[in-house]
Image 1: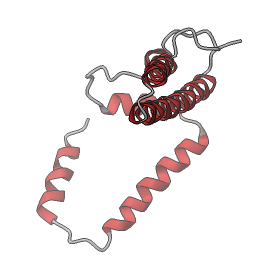
Image 2: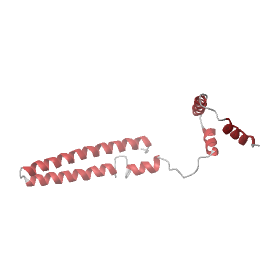
Image 3: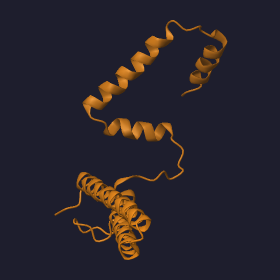
Image 4: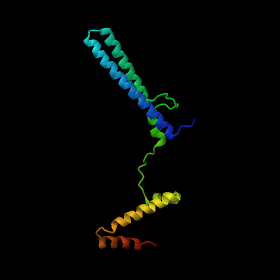
Length: 144
């Protein structure tokens, strides 16, 4: 079975849900230990504390998800390494934008144009700074 982004997220959700169940059980065991301690039932209290510790360890294993059902050790770091992108520190440039635009499908282009048109429409009712925009226009006149 190929590991997909969605299958990994589902697995992480399952592991975290099971971890929460373990933490609830650990809390309940700790409460039982306190009740047994109040009744001078030391052996029962010690057993409850031991049980609580085991459940906390199981909870930690579920959160780390080592050797989990889909076969990925440490699912969250695996997800971060393989299904998210790192920023390279590269500055976003017009070249990058144009490269993306040339690869865009028709729906993406329509959304882009629609967003730009909506932004342009929102500016109609704003004050217009002639000197600023004239300077911008002069900058564009330098194109060859």
